[in-house]
Every structure is written in structure tokens, then in C-alpha cells.
Length: 247
Image (cartoon, rainbow, N blue to C red):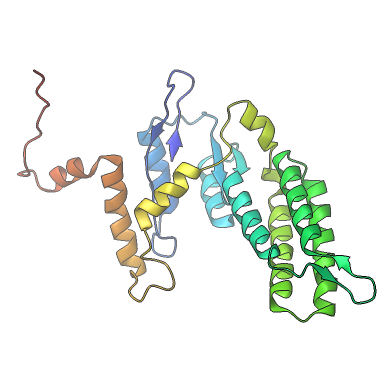
């Protein structure tokens, strides 16, 4: 979480925050208390970037209904990159009598989709996604290939994702040129630091929800530099604070 109080703070304070949704009974209060500890004022304008999930946005709306909510560019590009990689495995052409290009056309259309989304043109992006879906649907009728049907389904899901989040898609290019944040790459890096690979489905040994939640509370305090103070509150006899000695 990156938090800036007005213009007097050139470098925003950065704090990690984590919880397991299915275990934590009061995630909204936990986040609210963290923001308050960072100096949040009740009438302060806040800007949230999220992955578009309803759960995350519900927490944000609870904290500040009037805040600006934006769809994170990182999550858009990740989905587009996945579809682009899948499209590279499509047949070059479809049709026997009059072959029509497929792979190159889908790749070109995906690039157009990315361009429209970068400029906040959701209407045109959805139009292009509809065209891609129709091309893939026709291709799946001619060729019963799993990869075609899989990509067709992914494009349809992406269309629904964009349509549901259309109100939260700004002109990313304009924001980027103005020096405004468009992505939470820092947050994604923190997720990797905090969770690592232990919760990946293919792992033979995984944390329980309770174990993961409790460990996340410790890990975030370590990353925030707060763990020693917390430990000292629990155990007053813990080692005394040491002040750096300057020569």
C-alpha cells in the first residue's frame, strides 16, 4: 500500500497489508486502522487501484465511497499478454477453399485492443474483442482444436471483465504522461514477497487459511519494519532498543 498525504510529502509512505479473505472476519476495520495510522483524514481524497475484483472494491468503497477507483493497468496487460501468447499457437489460416488468415489477424486485433484500452476507449476495445471472438468461434467450427476453443473462451471472459469494469478504466496514456500512477507493480512484488509460492495449487504442502493469515500478519510487520516493536510490546523484557553510534 502506497500512501501520500497531500503535496508536502514527495515520497509516499509505503506499508504492506495482507489478510486471508475467507478467514479474517474484519478486513475492512483492519485496513481502515492501517490508513489511520498513516495519517488518513476523513475528508481526504483517496485513489484506489485494484484488479477489478468485487471483494477488493467492496473494501475500498466501505473506506471511502467518494474515492476514485481505477482498474490497475498491470492486470489488464497480464491478461492481454496471456492471450497474445496463446494466439501465437493458432493455425496460420482457416478455410479450405478460400483460406483466411487467423493467427496474424488475432494478434493484430489484440494489439489494437491494448491500444484502445491504453487510451481509455472502452467502447472500441469491446468492439474489437467481439470481432476476435467471432473469428475464433468460426475457426472452432472448422477445426476442432482445444487451443482455439480455449482462447475463444478466454477472450469472452476478458470481454466480460472489461465490460464490468468500464467505469474504472481511465485514459492510462494521459495519466502516465502526467506522472500519475497507473499500475501497482510494487504491490504485486510485495505479494510475491509475502506469499511466495506456498499457496500455489501445485504445491504438495500448503498453508491452512488460518495459518496463512497469521503468518501474513507477521510477514507484513517484518516488511514494514514494525515486528521488533510489536514483539517488545508482547515481551517487555526483550532486548533494549539500540541507538546508532556515529563516529
